[in-house]
Every structure is written in C-alpha cells, then in structure tokens.
Image (cartoon, rainbow, N blue to C red):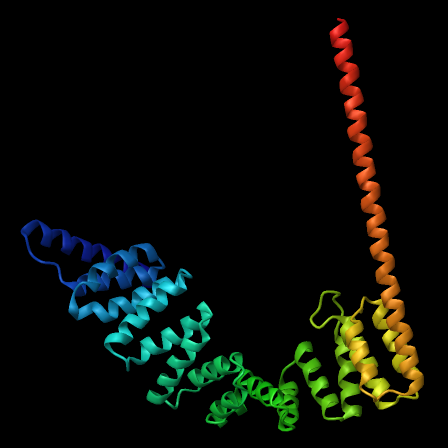
Length: 342
C-alpha cells in the first residue's frame, strides 16, 4: 500500500513538472527533492540520485539533498564519496549532528579511524547523552589502541553497560588490554547472558594471566568441549596448547600437561616459538622442560622431513616432465621422418 502511494506521488509530481515546462514556469527545488526521496524510499537509487542532484542546486534544499546523496552513496557502498558529501555539509555547518554521525560512521567503513574519532569527539560534545554514538566512539578508540580512553567513554553510559552486551564486552576488552583485574568480572557478566567460544577463550586466558588457574582450567575445558569444527577460531590445537601450558605451570610435576601438548601437536600445533617461550618462563619443572625440548625437536624433525619429501616430489615431477618432453620430441622426429619418406 505504501509503495502504491509513493508511485502515485511520483507520477503526479512528474506530471506537474511536465506541465510547468510546457507553460514556461520554474520547477521548485523542493519538488525535485521530494521526487528524489520518493525514489529513495522505493530503493531506486540511481533515479533518486538524479533528482536529488537537481534539488541540490537550490539553497533551500542543498543541505538535505547533499545529506541524502551521501546516504545513497553509502547504500551503494561508495563510502569515500558518501564521506565527501557528509563532510562538505560539515564545512558549512560544523555542528550538524546528522552529518557528524553519518560522517563518523562512514569513516569507519573507509578505514580512516583517526578522522572517525575526531567526528565522534565533536558529536559527543553536542549530544553527550547518545550511548550508541559513545559506543562507536569507544570502538574507534579501541581500534586505535587508546584503551584507557575507550574505557572512560564507556563509563559515561552506565545504563548501556548494564543493558547492552556489546557495550559490556568492549568495556571488558578495554580493561583486559590494560591488564586490569576488573576485566575478569565484566567478562563473567557477559558470559552469564551470552555465549561465544572466542570470548570464553579470551576469558580463560585472562584468568590464567592473573594466576586464577583452577577457574582458567575450567574455562579452557569448556572451550575445548564447545569446539568441533576443524577451522574454528581459535583452532582446537591452539586451545589444547593453552590447556597444556596451564597444566604445566599449575602442576608442573604432573604428566597431564605433556600429554595434552602431544595431543595438540597431533592436531597440527607446530608453534615452536610458543613452546620455547614456555621453557624460558622458568615456571615448568626440569622434567617438564626436558619433555618440552623433545617435543620441539620432534616438531622440527617432522618439518625437515616434510621439506625433504616435498623436494623429492618436486624433483620427481621435474624428471617426469623432462622424460615426457624427450618422448614428445622423439615422437615428433619419427613423425617427421615418416612424412619425409612419403
């Protein structure tokens, strides 16, 4: 029903414009603007862009037309063009909240996070109560590795921290990046109402980092039980290594950690640098370090054997190609001789 009304309006407006052209009357920019927005509502972006560009030439509709041209460009994934429209408006009207919000979000899409941060800073000076814009600002700051500033921004919105899981997770991650123990409680709050293997893995690592080994062990085992796909993130072999590392540190006399590490290697774990780092940490028993060195040697020997095998296979493939080439040459020579004798 709404679409019919929009189409009816467009037809009527076009009829009015044709009549105006016939009698020599000027068509108003508002009429162009209305037709452009009607096409926008229908999702006919090329037509909408054409009419809005006509409307943009008039002062009365310039800002609104340019703003919606920016929206159109954004919908069509022409993000740099969209940002240009929004930022042109800001040159004339630096306090335009809609243009600031649109420019900031579009700059995230273009990857210009420094510019996005400036837009969000200005926006939150004008509308400090906007929790959504505060979250986006904090997200940009986090991407810039300004973790303490991201945390400060999020703390201005206590209601959002209680009600919005995305805000709470970003808050926890900002604290984790600063090695704050408070992050533990915020991760736990998030996991009470949400479920994500990657987040739980982060949480387990945080618990291990703060030497809460029993809780970390429980979380790593939960992550392992939740991970079934071979191409999951994190990989099963990485989870097993983390579990092995924790077991070797928390109970260095037990053989369970080495067993878990051997299982990780069977599943494809081959990061010898990570194992070397564990050896150098001084947190593993002498017997454990000997076993770790043996595992490193086994991984390296296996890698060398694979390299040699690859070289042999490449050599054999090269020899086969040469033999085939020689055979083809012989066949060609014989054919040539036969042709010549005929």
